[in-house]
Length: 222
Image (cartoon, rainbow, N blue to C red):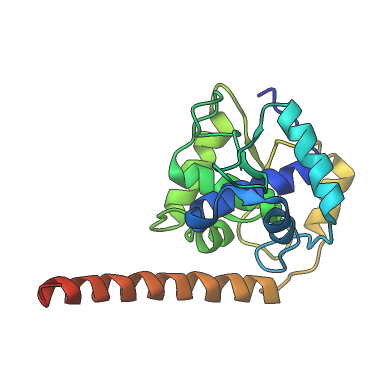
């Protein structure tokens, strides 16, 4: 893999991927919309407070790398931006919807366990269970053009190891850091974890409600 991103570039790319999937009617994004997405308080870790100038400078660098395209509609005076990072036909990176959603979550929220990724990435792709996530992670970690993710040492008190994306460069974990991870105190679900779980449940209920409404319209001859 020859793509290397800064932390800000990772946040911008992750936001463009996310919004392209979850709000396609509002995609590509204007600078203002993208800045708001980067600073979003939900589904982000860490939460950032970027200004439009910083986001624009980051976009300019990504345009130079051919990872972002400025695209304005006919008659529109506001530039809009879309990613060329993957699954666009412009580059060589192609991922399944599941792998794409998982990578997006890792870019937006940092290292996570398969269980956390199952809860959070299911808003962007169909993930039936943790086994689906683990299968996608294994593929991402072993692809010939990768690796794109790496499994981190298991933290004390956690049943599962976390995974991290590698677009910010290789992750070197020495003996000291590994020992620190092993001695970390056990943690329960954070507020962000609970919010992510509730958001996924609401999204699932909304999809089910939409299906019921569609079926009723068909039954009523509408």
